[in-house]
Image (cartoon, rainbow, N blue to C red; front, top):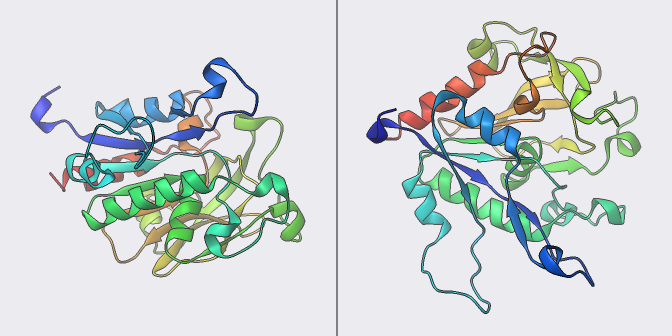
Length: 260
């Protein structure tokens, strides 16, 4: 691996906040990454660095590093999955306390997204990451598919990463060109929220075959700002019924390499 040519990819952190009354590690704020997504990104011999949220105030503040510095240093950004995007981020009140999301993480990832877009670096959003991209550009979400979207297929199940459904790429879209067809196949689906209204300058690249739920989006004004509702990191070898997501990863790498 040649160091001066190795792509450097940033991965947003999942945030776990202190639990009331807890002691030990659960009394601390945790910033973590899920192993599968890191391994998927690293599968083409790229360097992955988790980008921590930056505390502007507090008992420990010894650095002038900003999220903008990460955007300037790294070659691309992946927004990983996790908790719901807060409905407050798109001007709504949570219809259920369980769907309130994480406003702290929303603010951190939206700033991170903004800095990478401003720096002209590629961004790939996965599941929550796609939803965040949509909201960041002015779109909205269904807070809960089962209760708000009549006739919707099942997009989340107890089987977790073993649950899948079929999608189809938009004709003449970028995904259809990357993958060479419009009949995409099965994808791992773990979400109860989805895109309701599209953000500004976003195009639909894939939909659920059964119910039309938006499964991939792309910003038309940037070289590579893309989101997928499914989890490509869970498309492991041996599960031949699932979509091979290598073309998506390769397209992301090409865009990242072009910024160097």
